[in-house]
Length: 262
Image 1 (tube, helix red, strand yellow):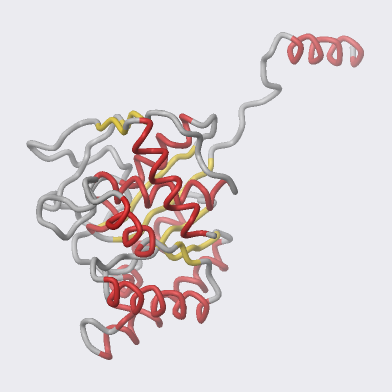
Image 2 (cartoon, one colour):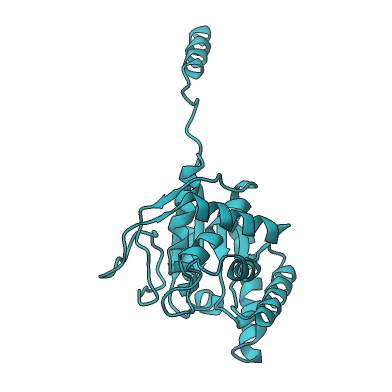
């Protein structure tokens, strides 16, 4: 009987069928409008699928929210108790780590990140800090420095975004880096975030090919309550339900991200 099973398995593999389905990487995004405008979690899922990988993303987001808010309401802890995740991607409100909202705000941000790190260790999930961005070069440098120091202090990896934006604004100013309000992520910046996350997840850059994302492309006017949800829930009137990134756009942003990483 054992011999028959072995032969059957060999035939299955020779025919090109996988022995078992690869487990999806389950990723929890915690953030604010910088996370959901453009729907970064859904882009990550689509990038993974286009590159033969499998990511299942969920998110806890609210416009203007801080990590302190999410630690206070215990929504992250409840999510980690209800489901298992491989990676928790935390994105702070833009500027909090550089004290843009006062000294108390950056102290709270650092404390919340440290507490989140402790929670992640307790729940056996890896934590990473996803950077925010500034359009002005000097402000961008200060932000990256502050966010990097906060990540090092908490003992978590830091994914730099603002450096990529600065390079992109110089090299490809025609790209839609910002949404119509001039503040939130436009399609190019949302894709840049997703590409950096893909690289962190799989240790390589995605292949250069057109990318189709069939998901709500949330806008700054989109509204969420901080509840665990998929990136496909809460569609508001007027929101596009898909976006296509041409091959040349994907190639340019991968190039920017890889140079910033180097």
